[in-house]
Length: 153
Ligand code: ADP
Image (tube, rainbow, N blue to C red; front, side):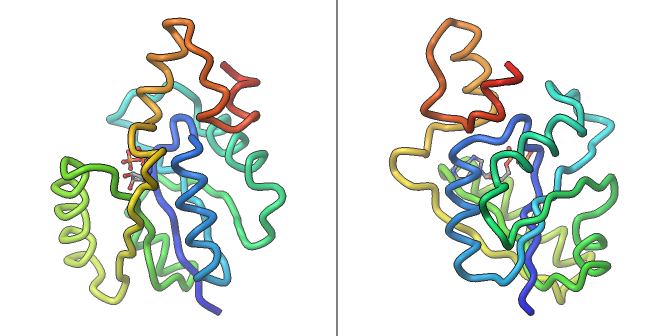
């Protein structure tokens, strides 16, 4: 069974994240969406809320699980028997960060490889922070996030 981890802040989950997840779910038998607990990073939503929003948004997807973890993702992946980490790329600016992250992960555990999905054209501008800004300014963001997020805003 091919298992992959999709790690991230998901603060909150967006339709950009969900698009990557749906595409990856066609390749792997099981994907664990992993909410990273980063004590050094101020989050908008609690870990529990972030997990719940993803669970609700993925309830119709049979091969998706949701979890949270406060250690290194590659260590979590090893515990779960996962072979790949999934990430998304929106712009060249994402590349630099993702490339450094991939190198650090490789140093920590070279047997776990990373798989990248290019953001779809209509989703390249979607980020958790952009959604919060648009919402604060009164823009209707319902086409950009799942219902589970709208409910909690
Ligand atoms: P992190 O803080 O770990 O970057 P995010 O929740 O911001 O967590 O993103 C998780 C992953 O999803 C990252 O690889 C990011 O590039 C990717 N991602 C976020 N939004 C999109 C999008 N609209 N299209 C494609 N990939 C995306």
